[in-house]
Length: 185
Image (cartoon, rainbow, N blue to C red):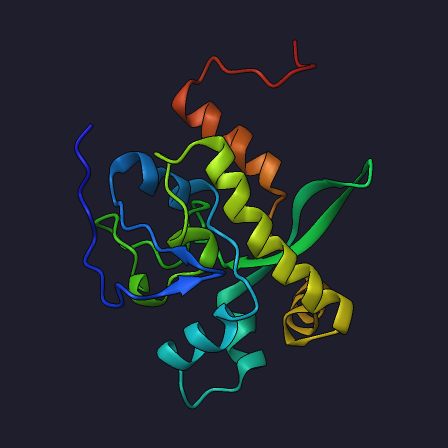
C-alpha cells in the first residue's frame, strides 16, 4: 500500500508527547467517512480560533460539533463511557470537514482523534494514544471544564453523534455488505 501524505502545516504539533501522523491514504480517509475522530480539550480553542476567531466558542461548537456518547473503557473492572466531542456530520455520515476530494479541510488543526491516529498503527499503539486523549477528556469532565460544558450544551440541544461502536458496524457493512453483527441472523 502506498501512502499519500497530506501537507503538514505544523510538523512540530504534538499532544501528550506524541507525534502527529500524516497519512492520507484511502484506508485512513475511510475513518473520516464513518467515524470522525474525537477532540481533546486543547482542540476546542485551537480549531475554533483557526476557523472562526471572532465567533463565540459555544456558538461555533453548536454549528461544528456533536456530543458523542464516547468510547467504552474498562477501569477498575468496570466498563463506562467517557463522553467526547466529535466533528459534526454531513447527511451521508461523513465528517463535515471532509472535502469532496477526500481531504481534510482543517488538516493543520485537525482534532486529536484524527491527527494522531492512522489505520497503519498497531492496535496497541492506537490504544496507547487513545488512553492519553481520553484521560485529558476525563480530567476536564471531573473539573467541570469547558469541554464538558460544551458537550452538555450539545447533548441538551439534541446534537448527538451515534456511538463509536455503531459507526464501526456501519463502516464494516460498507466494506462488506454481507457483514452481520453478532447476534443478527
